[in-house]
Length: 314
Image (cartoon, rainbow, N blue to C red; front, side):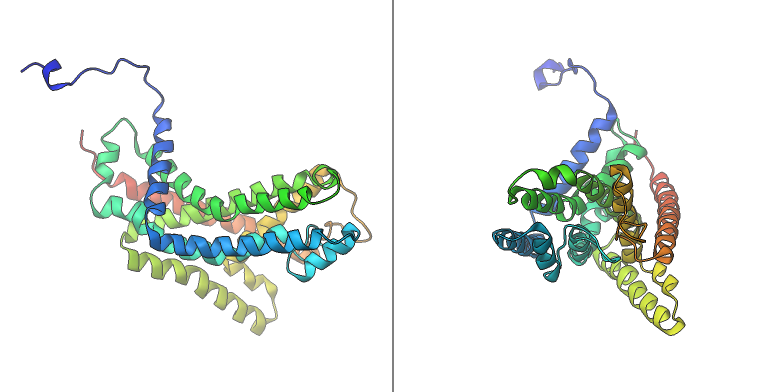
């Protein structure tokens, strides 16, 4: 029987770059998550937080009062469009509040998206195709990062659009064009750190229970430990042990850079546009950036070594 009779034939189209396979890996990962009803419960809890902020913004903007008074009223509900007195603005607060939902979702997604490839020997199938290890790693990192962005960055951008949409003019969007840039930058930091850590842990631990326990302990235990050490030693630098706080510090750096990019003039003696309370907090944010870069570098090296250990079937 000839090849044509069994419907095998050569590829006649134009070959595309193997990097296109990263998009397929992201698509398959999203389908794996959204096909499971139990994950929709966690995603729904994240959407409830978004709908709460959406409703508050809608209700407050309906009052015919000056924008400064609206911002103060929103600040009473935990959302402020501008930072003041070293307090995070509403976008940082919203994305930080989403961290609990993100942590829970990723704790149970690691085994599904990454661990199963090692546990069921699916990785050699990936690597026997035209893609290689770097395409697989980048694809998985982008898949987890996309999942994080859907719960943090995208809702925060929608809140920015809503707040400007319910004002009487386009002044808010025009005067705060740097805000969505800072939100995207903060989202990239959060997505990068969480995706690198989760994919690396999942590649080594593989099963759901060890991944969930280790992932939760990494954030909950370090957060509790840093808080206790900070109180006993009366030194806020111990907060740098907390990964979530480090990510938030770097997020504040993103908004500070956005203010500098916009060329805004700081008011009074505060040279940080109200984003950082003092010089010590600004220096801690720089140390937090260094810590996250170092941790992600070590994790990437460990992940590459783990993937390289898999034998490829040619």
